[in-house]
Image (tube, rainbow, N blue to C red; front, side, top):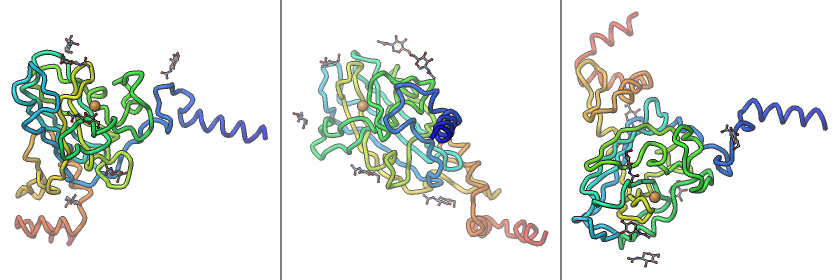
Length: 248
Ligand SMILES: *[C@@H]1O[C@H](CO)[C@@H](O)[C@H](O)[C@H]1NC(C)=O
Ligand SMILES: *[C@@H]1O[C@H](CO)[C@@H](O)[C@H](O)[C@H]1NC(C)=O
Ligand SMILES: *[C@@H]1O[C@H](CO)[C@@H](O)[C@H](O)[C@H]1NC(C)=O
Ligand SMILES: *[C@@H]1O[C@H](CO)[C@@H](O)[C@H](O)[C@H]1NC(C)=O
Ligand SMILES: *[C@@H]1O[C@H](CO)[C@@H](O)[C@H](O)[C@H]1NC(C)=O
Ligand SMILES: *[C@@H]1O[C@H](CO)[C@@H](O)[C@H](O)[C@H]1NC(C)=O
Ligand SMILES: [Cu+2]
């Protein structure tokens, strides 16, 4: 009895659970996702009409959230862009929400933030401990929309592009809010052609066409299977190099 208590307490200590606080989700801190498919990419683009027709809004916010599997399949690299924001009511936040936007465009239908570890919204996310925040709370973890136009690139370890897990978000949506949380506009994610942002180079390496994706490109090479390497060789006439390598 006593021995098993000692064992479980020290196990908790070793895993760091005792050091954590109330902001941690009911199911613990968000887990790092390490198996995102190389080159998989999704994008959500805001519609032409807003959900909340604020007086200070001319048309709708223009914007998108693009997400690509991170280096070595770890997490996701985001590129966000927003402009034509309302002239009052900022700073604006944006999050991944649980459900997709209904066909009538009603952002209320996107339900709550993506929160597979059941943390809840309060207290607010501590951006220095992103694992303790709601998985979908991108603005909380990586910054609110503080300018117009606003662009940002950031990496998140906790979102998944692998279907079947709670942190998967390609079938969900994102919402842009006023500072008072009123939902201004929202969009669904859609899967881009896999590997569409990557172009092989004659050196046999892989470079991104979009900026900010360099780590993903460099990490692609070590995990490239033999078949993939042969494919690159076929396309770029590095067969002699391959033959040399094989001969060694
Ligand atoms: C947890 O909360 C307590 C009381 O608010 C605080 O003293 C402590 O530093 C916190 N621990 C961590 C790991 O944040
Ligand atoms: C993208 O290309 C890499 C390298 O060829 C491959 O391993 C990976 O499975 C591809 N990803 C997708 C999502 O098709
Ligand atoms: C939130 O802020 C916006 C912009 O200032 C305003 O139009 C809206 O009425 C506010 N909503 C609530 C519920 O206060
Ligand atoms: C959006 O949906 C909510 C919940 O279903 C509903 O209460 C609200 O009236 C709808 N808003 C609009 C503008 O249709
Ligand atoms: C918006 O963010 C900027 C930059 O962080 C900050 O200086 C400003 O005080 C914020 N505005 C409001 C209304 O919170
Ligand atoms: C999205 O996908 C996840 C993982 O496969 C699933 O659990 C969830 O129910 C899906 N959500 C919707 C709205 O289809
Ligand atoms: Cu939100």
